[in-house]
Length: 253
Image (cartoon, rainbow, N blue to C red; front, side, top):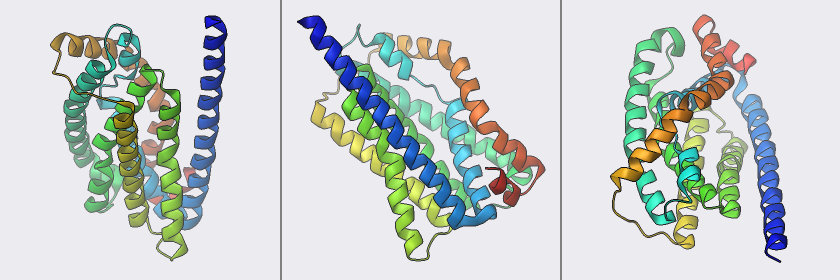
């Protein structure tokens, strides 16, 4: 009887996860088409470069503890694991934001070619927000809470699609508003995820230095592999931006 229940649970969670990934794929594809059609080549290039800056910053600099949470879940309670994961995320996100902003300043003339700093700053706000969103998602995955994790995974691209579609209907489909819609989508998904976690039940515990060390140690072991995975997805945008202009970046993306 226990094996049958486990099998049913596995099949249900597999179906939820697969379905969630398919919905994300649909929204991501629609978002790509929408931004390309509405923004045009030059503004699409600026948007792609700014969004890639956020994602590559998180990939290269941040300490991703998702696999660490899964690895240590059987050893620690959910509340203790969640509390210390959030502590790590606070420091990791601030460090990532500071270093990434400094690097952007160094390569600004060669890569960003006059993109307004207010747009760059607005997009960079997403760095810590996305890192907290990723931490909450991985917390739920480590706890085998696939339904809530799937809802959060779908939320961000879905919110962006409806937000940018809305502003585009009123003739406000500019790169500035696209960047604002990215921020709205991340904030919306983060608030939504916080509500789901609170409803699930979360009591904050004190910092556990031993647990923090274990989370960081395991994350460092897996960092290189994850780093190269993200570099192959995003680094080409920066190569194109270095040698060409935003219009060519937009056509390429």
